[in-house]
Image 1 (cartoon, helix red, strand yellow):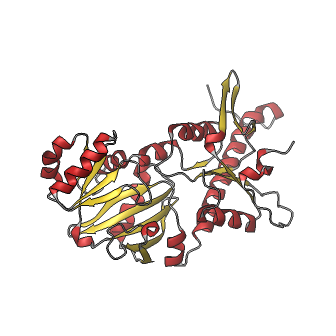
Image 2 (tube, rainbow, N blue to C red):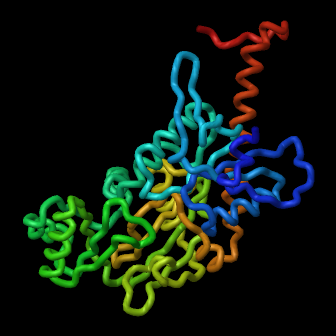
Image 3 (cartoon, rainbow, N blue to C red):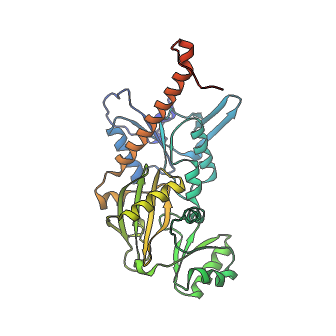
Amino acid sequence: MNGPQDDPKTDKLKHSVPPAASASMHIVALSHDRTNHSLRRFRATAVEMGHKFSRIDPIECDLMLGPGTRGIHYQGRPFPKTDVALVRRGSGIQDLEITVVNHLENTGVPVLNGTYGLLTSRDKFWGLRRLADRGIPVPRTVVLHDPKHIKQAIKLIGEPPVVIKLLRGMRGVGVMIADSMNSLRSIAETFHSKGERILLQEYIEESKGSDVRVLVVGGKVVAAMKRQADVGEFRSNIHRGGTGTLFKLDAKSKRMAVDAARIIGLDIAGVDLIYSDHGPLVMEVNSSPGFEGLEKATGQDIARIIMEHSIALAEGRAKTMARKLRLVEAPEVGKGVVGPRH
Protein backbone atom coordinates (compact mmCIF):
# COMPACT_ATOMS: atom_id res chain seq x y z
CA MET A 1 0.00 0.00 0.00
CA ASN A 2 1.29 3.46 -0.85
CA GLY A 3 2.01 5.80 2.04
CA PRO A 4 0.08 9.05 2.51
CA GLN A 5 2.75 11.02 0.69
CA ASP A 6 1.90 9.04 -2.50
CA ASP A 7 -1.83 9.72 -2.21
CA PRO A 8 -3.09 12.31 -4.75
CA LYS A 9 -4.94 14.02 -1.92
CA THR A 10 -1.62 15.13 -0.46
CA ASP A 11 -0.90 17.08 -3.69
CA LYS A 12 2.58 15.68 -4.11
CA LEU A 13 4.27 17.17 -7.19
CA LYS A 14 4.77 14.80 -10.08
CA HIS A 15 7.96 16.27 -11.52
CA SER A 16 10.89 14.47 -13.09
CA VAL A 17 13.49 14.83 -10.37
CA PRO A 18 17.06 13.46 -10.33
CA PRO A 19 17.74 10.81 -7.69
CA ALA A 20 17.62 12.56 -4.34
CA ALA A 21 20.83 12.98 -2.40
CA SER A 22 21.23 11.47 1.04
CA ALA A 23 20.35 14.88 2.47
CA SER A 24 16.94 14.85 0.76
CA MET A 25 14.15 15.72 3.16
CA HIS A 26 10.39 15.34 3.28
CA ILE A 27 8.70 18.68 3.88
CA VAL A 28 5.01 18.66 4.81
CA ALA A 29 2.64 21.62 4.63
CA LEU A 30 -0.33 21.45 7.00
CA SER A 31 -3.06 23.20 5.05
CA HIS A 32 -6.69 22.98 3.90
CA ASP A 33 -5.90 24.73 0.65
CA ARG A 34 -4.72 22.62 -2.26
CA THR A 35 -3.40 25.05 -4.85
CA ASN A 36 -2.85 28.52 -3.41
CA HIS A 37 0.19 30.57 -4.42
CA SER A 38 2.27 29.77 -1.33
CA LEU A 39 1.83 26.00 -1.70
CA ARG A 40 2.64 26.09 -5.42
CA ARG A 41 5.81 28.04 -4.72
CA PHE A 42 6.83 25.78 -1.85
CA ARG A 43 6.31 22.65 -3.97
CA ALA A 44 8.33 23.98 -6.88
CA THR A 45 11.12 25.22 -4.62
CA ALA A 46 11.35 21.97 -2.67
CA VAL A 47 11.61 19.95 -5.88
CA GLU A 48 14.28 22.31 -7.26
CA MET A 49 16.27 21.75 -4.07
CA GLY A 50 15.95 17.96 -4.31
CA HIS A 51 13.39 17.47 -1.56
CA LYS A 52 9.96 15.87 -1.34
CA PHE A 53 6.91 17.99 -0.62
CA SER A 54 3.41 16.96 0.50
CA ARG A 55 0.28 18.74 1.62
CA ILE A 56 -1.66 17.21 4.50
CA ASP A 57 -4.96 18.49 5.83
CA PRO A 58 -4.70 18.53 9.65
CA ILE A 59 -8.47 18.12 9.98
CA GLU A 60 -8.12 14.63 8.50
CA CYS A 61 -5.60 13.47 11.11
CA ASP A 62 -6.23 10.99 13.94
CA LEU A 63 -4.12 11.27 17.09
CA MET A 64 -2.85 8.24 18.99
CA LEU A 65 -1.86 8.21 22.66
CA GLY A 66 -1.21 5.25 24.95
CA PRO A 67 1.52 3.45 26.91
CA GLY A 68 4.66 4.00 24.86
CA THR A 69 2.60 5.34 21.96
CA ARG A 70 2.36 8.84 20.59
CA GLY A 71 1.48 8.92 16.93
CA ILE A 72 -0.61 10.42 14.16
CA HIS A 73 -2.55 8.80 11.34
CA TYR A 74 -3.61 10.58 8.17
CA GLN A 75 -6.56 9.24 6.22
CA GLY A 76 -6.34 6.00 8.19
CA ARG A 77 -2.63 5.40 7.62
CA PRO A 78 0.49 6.30 9.62
CA PHE A 79 1.63 9.88 9.18
CA PRO A 80 4.53 9.90 6.68
CA LYS A 81 8.07 10.34 7.93
CA THR A 82 8.46 14.11 8.09
CA ASP A 83 11.64 16.13 8.49
CA VAL A 84 9.96 19.51 8.92
CA ALA A 85 6.36 20.77 8.81
CA LEU A 86 5.09 24.16 7.68
CA VAL A 87 1.76 25.26 9.16
CA ARG A 88 -0.10 27.17 6.48
CA ARG A 89 -3.14 28.15 8.52
CA GLY A 90 -3.76 31.69 9.74
CA SER A 91 -5.99 33.10 12.47
CA GLY A 92 -8.83 30.82 11.36
CA ILE A 93 -6.95 27.77 12.63
CA GLN A 94 -9.19 25.55 14.76
CA ASP A 95 -8.49 23.99 18.15
CA LEU A 96 -8.26 20.50 16.63
CA GLU A 97 -5.64 21.68 14.14
CA ILE A 98 -3.54 23.21 16.91
CA THR A 99 -3.79 19.92 18.80
CA VAL A 100 -2.45 18.14 15.71
CA VAL A 101 0.43 20.62 15.53
CA ASN A 102 1.21 20.12 19.21
CA HIS A 103 1.07 16.34 18.87
CA LEU A 104 3.39 16.49 15.85
CA GLU A 105 5.85 18.65 17.80
CA ASN A 106 5.78 16.12 20.62
CA THR A 107 6.76 13.33 18.24
CA GLY A 108 9.96 15.28 17.58
CA VAL A 109 9.12 16.94 14.24
CA PRO A 110 10.24 20.59 13.86
CA VAL A 111 7.12 22.65 13.13
CA LEU A 112 6.93 26.20 11.77
CA ASN A 113 5.10 27.80 13.41
CA GLY A 114 4.65 25.97 16.69
CA THR A 115 1.80 25.71 19.16
CA TYR A 116 2.54 28.76 21.29
CA GLY A 117 2.85 31.13 18.35
CA LEU A 118 -0.32 29.82 16.74
CA LEU A 119 -2.33 30.25 19.93
CA THR A 120 -1.00 33.74 20.62
CA SER A 121 -1.39 35.08 17.09
CA ARG A 122 -4.81 33.70 16.14
CA ASP A 123 -6.61 36.02 18.59
CA LYS A 124 -5.88 39.61 17.58
CA PHE A 125 -6.43 41.06 21.06
CA TRP A 126 -4.40 38.38 22.83
CA GLY A 127 -1.48 39.05 20.50
CA LEU A 128 -1.70 42.83 20.86
CA ARG A 129 -1.86 42.53 24.63
CA ARG A 130 1.31 40.42 24.66
CA LEU A 131 3.06 43.07 22.57
CA ALA A 132 1.84 45.96 24.72
CA ASP A 133 2.94 44.13 27.88
CA ARG A 134 6.46 43.99 26.44
CA GLY A 135 6.56 47.65 25.46
CA ILE A 136 5.74 47.36 21.75
CA PRO A 137 3.54 50.30 20.60
CA VAL A 138 0.11 49.17 19.34
CA PRO A 139 -3.05 51.08 18.38
CA ARG A 140 -5.53 51.85 21.15
CA THR A 141 -7.84 48.84 21.16
CA VAL A 142 -11.05 47.64 22.83
CA VAL A 143 -12.74 44.24 22.69
CA LEU A 144 -16.43 45.09 22.88
CA HIS A 145 -18.86 42.66 24.46
CA ASP A 146 -22.03 44.71 24.50
CA PRO A 147 -23.00 47.64 22.22
CA LYS A 148 -24.33 49.41 25.32
CA HIS A 149 -20.71 50.05 26.31
CA ILE A 150 -19.70 51.90 23.14
CA LYS A 151 -19.46 55.28 24.88
CA GLN A 152 -16.88 53.94 27.33
CA ALA A 153 -14.90 52.42 24.44
CA ILE A 154 -14.90 55.72 22.53
CA LYS A 155 -13.34 57.47 25.53
CA LEU A 156 -10.25 55.31 25.00
CA ILE A 157 -9.95 54.97 21.22
CA GLY A 158 -11.36 58.34 20.18
CA GLU A 159 -14.33 59.52 18.14
CA PRO A 160 -15.21 57.89 14.79
CA PRO A 161 -13.99 56.94 12.31
CA VAL A 162 -13.26 53.69 14.16
CA VAL A 163 -11.85 50.47 12.74
CA ILE A 164 -13.87 47.33 13.50
CA LYS A 165 -12.37 43.83 13.25
CA LEU A 166 -13.37 40.28 13.98
CA LEU A 167 -11.08 38.73 16.57
CA ARG A 168 -10.03 35.99 14.14
CA GLY A 169 -10.44 37.51 10.70
CA MET A 170 -7.81 37.22 7.97
CA ARG A 171 -6.96 38.75 4.58
CA GLY A 172 -9.04 41.78 5.47
CA VAL A 173 -12.24 39.76 5.87
CA GLY A 174 -14.32 41.10 8.75
CA VAL A 175 -12.54 44.47 8.80
CA MET A 176 -14.76 47.54 8.54
CA ILE A 177 -14.73 51.22 9.30
CA ALA A 178 -17.49 53.12 11.09
CA ASP A 179 -17.61 56.81 10.18
CA SER A 180 -20.20 57.77 12.79
CA MET A 181 -21.56 56.72 16.16
CA ASN A 182 -24.76 55.53 14.47
CA SER A 183 -22.94 53.24 12.05
CA LEU A 184 -20.66 52.01 14.84
CA ARG A 185 -23.62 51.17 17.03
CA SER A 186 -25.45 49.47 14.14
CA ILE A 187 -22.47 47.27 13.24
CA ALA A 188 -21.81 46.41 16.88
CA GLU A 189 -25.44 45.44 17.44
CA THR A 190 -25.42 43.22 14.36
CA PHE A 191 -22.35 41.30 15.51
CA HIS A 192 -23.67 41.12 19.07
CA SER A 193 -26.88 39.51 17.80
CA LYS A 194 -24.73 36.83 16.11
CA GLY A 195 -22.79 36.16 19.31
CA GLU A 196 -19.59 37.69 17.90
CA ARG A 197 -17.25 39.85 19.92
CA ILE A 198 -15.58 42.58 17.95
CA LEU A 199 -12.38 44.51 18.27
CA LEU A 200 -12.51 48.31 18.02
CA GLN A 201 -9.34 50.15 17.08
CA GLU A 202 -8.37 53.77 16.68
CA TYR A 203 -8.25 54.93 13.08
CA ILE A 204 -4.81 56.29 12.15
CA GLU A 205 -5.88 58.96 9.69
CA GLU A 206 -2.34 60.04 8.80
CA SER A 207 -1.59 56.57 7.40
CA LYS A 208 -3.95 57.40 4.50
CA GLY A 209 -5.03 53.80 3.93
CA SER A 210 -1.54 52.36 3.90
CA ASP A 211 0.50 50.02 6.08
CA VAL A 212 3.77 48.11 5.82
CA ARG A 213 3.97 44.32 5.70
CA VAL A 214 7.25 43.04 7.11
CA LEU A 215 8.28 39.40 6.71
CA VAL A 216 10.39 38.05 9.56
CA VAL A 217 12.03 34.64 9.16
CA GLY A 218 14.25 33.14 11.83
CA GLY A 219 14.55 36.40 13.74
CA LYS A 220 15.56 38.47 10.69
CA VAL A 221 13.69 40.88 8.45
CA VAL A 222 13.89 39.42 4.94
CA ALA A 223 11.47 41.70 3.04
CA ALA A 224 9.12 44.64 3.49
CA MET A 225 6.54 46.32 1.29
CA LYS A 226 4.21 49.25 1.62
CA ARG A 227 0.60 48.32 0.92
CA GLN A 228 -1.74 51.03 -0.34
CA ALA A 229 -5.51 50.61 -0.35
CA ASP A 230 -7.40 50.86 -3.62
CA VAL A 231 -9.50 53.94 -4.36
CA GLY A 232 -12.62 53.95 -2.17
CA GLU A 233 -11.20 51.21 0.09
CA PHE A 234 -9.43 51.65 3.42
CA ARG A 235 -8.14 48.06 3.72
CA SER A 236 -4.67 47.79 2.23
CA ASN A 237 -4.58 43.98 1.94
CA ILE A 238 -3.40 42.75 -1.46
CA HIS A 239 -6.36 40.34 -1.50
CA ARG A 240 -8.66 43.37 -1.22
CA GLY A 241 -7.15 45.09 -4.25
CA GLY A 242 -4.32 46.93 -2.49
CA THR A 243 -1.01 47.51 -4.24
CA GLY A 244 2.42 46.69 -2.87
CA THR A 245 5.70 48.52 -3.40
CA LEU A 246 9.19 47.95 -2.06
CA PHE A 247 9.71 49.70 1.29
CA LYS A 248 12.97 50.39 3.11
CA LEU A 249 12.58 50.03 6.86
CA ASP A 250 14.49 52.19 9.30
CA ALA A 251 16.40 50.55 12.15
CA LYS A 252 13.62 51.19 14.68
CA SER A 253 10.96 49.55 12.51
CA LYS A 254 13.19 46.55 11.83
CA ARG A 255 13.80 46.04 15.52
CA MET A 256 10.11 46.43 16.27
CA ALA A 257 9.12 43.81 13.68
CA VAL A 258 11.72 41.31 14.88
CA ASP A 259 10.75 41.85 18.53
CA ALA A 260 7.05 41.45 17.72
CA ALA A 261 7.62 38.10 15.99
CA ARG A 262 9.75 36.88 18.90
CA ILE A 263 7.26 37.98 21.57
CA ILE A 264 4.34 36.32 19.79
CA GLY A 265 6.47 33.19 19.39
CA LEU A 266 6.64 32.97 15.60
CA ASP A 267 9.64 31.82 13.59
CA ILE A 268 7.90 32.93 10.38
CA ALA A 269 5.75 36.03 10.77
CA GLY A 270 4.04 38.71 8.76
CA VAL A 271 4.21 41.83 10.93
CA ASP A 272 1.94 44.69 9.90
CA LEU A 273 3.14 48.16 10.84
CA ILE A 274 1.16 51.36 10.56
CA TYR A 275 2.80 54.76 10.79
CA SER A 276 1.21 57.41 13.01
CA ASP A 277 2.34 60.93 13.88
CA HIS A 278 3.93 59.38 16.96
CA GLY A 279 5.89 56.71 15.08
CA PRO A 280 5.31 53.10 13.96
CA LEU A 281 2.73 50.88 15.64
CA VAL A 282 2.32 47.11 15.32
CA MET A 283 -1.19 46.61 14.01
CA GLU A 284 -1.13 42.82 13.68
CA VAL A 285 1.16 39.78 13.58
CA ASN A 286 0.26 36.91 11.23
CA SER A 287 1.43 33.31 11.62
CA SER A 288 0.87 32.23 8.01
CA PRO A 289 1.65 35.23 5.83
CA GLY A 290 1.00 34.97 2.11
CA PHE A 291 3.83 36.29 0.00
CA GLU A 292 2.66 36.61 -3.60
CA GLY A 293 2.45 40.39 -3.39
CA LEU A 294 5.66 40.54 -1.39
CA GLU A 295 7.59 38.62 -4.04
CA LYS A 296 6.27 40.89 -6.79
CA ALA A 297 7.00 44.07 -4.85
CA THR A 298 10.49 43.16 -3.63
CA GLY A 299 11.81 40.71 -6.21
CA GLN A 300 12.80 38.40 -3.35
CA ASP A 301 12.46 34.62 -3.64
CA ILE A 302 10.44 34.34 -0.44
CA ALA A 303 9.57 30.67 -0.94
CA ARG A 304 13.26 29.74 -1.09
CA ILE A 305 14.12 31.87 1.95
CA ILE A 306 11.44 30.11 4.03
CA MET A 307 12.36 26.69 2.64
CA GLU A 308 16.08 27.15 3.35
CA HIS A 309 15.35 28.27 6.90
CA SER A 310 13.01 25.32 7.49
CA ILE A 311 15.56 22.82 6.15
CA ALA A 312 18.34 24.37 8.25
CA LEU A 313 16.12 24.00 11.33
CA ALA A 314 15.46 20.34 10.49
CA GLU A 315 19.18 19.68 9.95
CA GLY A 316 19.97 21.34 13.28
CA ARG A 317 17.37 19.21 15.03
CA ALA A 318 18.78 16.04 13.43
CA LYS A 319 22.34 16.91 14.53
CA THR A 320 21.15 17.61 18.08
CA MET A 321 19.31 14.28 18.24
CA ALA A 322 22.36 12.44 16.86
CA ARG A 323 24.57 14.10 19.46
CA LYS A 324 22.22 13.06 22.28
CA LEU A 325 22.11 9.52 20.92
CA ARG A 326 25.92 9.33 20.86
CA LEU A 327 26.07 10.47 24.48
CA VAL A 328 23.66 7.74 25.51
CA GLU A 329 25.36 5.02 23.46
CA ALA A 330 28.98 5.98 24.16
CA PRO A 331 29.43 4.15 27.51
CA GLU A 332 28.02 0.96 25.96
CA VAL A 333 30.50 0.94 23.09
CA GLY A 334 33.44 1.69 25.35
CA LYS A 335 34.39 5.12 24.11
CA GLY A 336 34.95 6.34 27.60
CA VAL A 337 32.47 9.20 27.35
CA VAL A 338 30.76 10.04 30.60
CA GLY A 339 27.06 10.63 30.14
CA PRO A 340 24.94 13.13 32.07
CA ARG A 341 24.65 12.51 35.79
CA HIS A 342 21.25 11.67 37.25
